[in-house]
Length: 424
Image (cartoon, rainbow, N blue to C red):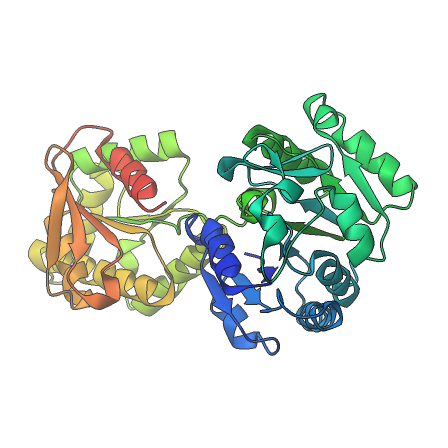
């Protein structure tokens, strides 16, 4: 997943914007550092940098935004959201200029409205609870009074860049891109968007996603439009793959595996059981782990199973028995191998859930993981319980178990669907 950075001018703004990302399961960190973000970026998907510049003079604010944006660009960050106050307090224009210059952006799309909090933009004017900004208490704020409502005029004082406007009528009539293209031709570098309702924000975000998401354009605005950013840039993480291990050789389980493969298009990994007894066990494990890695990279769910047909089971067991192994020992060795595979997968990859069918398989996997126990939560369907391991290491992984010869044809499919739903 690509990294995304928000540059805010105060701590509360940094937090109320960052939460728009974190509530969508995007790992987000807020920092007040103004340089060297390597550690933070390694440990999150969205970084919010608080400049603490709202009360600075315009030159200081510009320099902070410039240096942070320049630093981020040198680290390979290509997408930035310049968070602003929805009532235009602070050094809006200076910081946009600084961030654009530091990051070498060609333009900025400014969407300042927060309609759900009655902070709207209409014909380029800011309204607070349907009252022009200049006529509200913001105009007499003791530290950062804003005595102008028309955004182009505010920016003309604070920024050196040419400003353009996309009004709400153009947004409602599907003329957003046409208007943007006109403004670019006229040399505009900061384009302001009206927004009276949240639907206006939606229409703007759809246009950007379709036409401008890959362009060298900085986004700017309040927490309102920030909520749309994860969707525009595909930042919302997908649940990690689920791991399903079908060690049971029962006819019921084989039918359930066949149904799952048919309906979900999951590509299964079959254990060549004979290799576990002919000296090729290590090679078999290596081949399986290669296949698992290939599926994991593509974010595909992983199904590992042991057999397709009863005739295959009977023939295999007869062949191995001639080497002096009992049926009980053969079954135990297969279950042990599946436990080893499960342990290696969980140690190497993040998974969303673990489905186990077959009593021997379930207990051997638990032993391999050194699991102390399971907190049982409920049933997915009758006779198919789910829960979470007690162990801290695996406590976030859903564990589902099913007796081998139990359940309807769709039991494994329904279990997989449940894991994916719960892990979103």
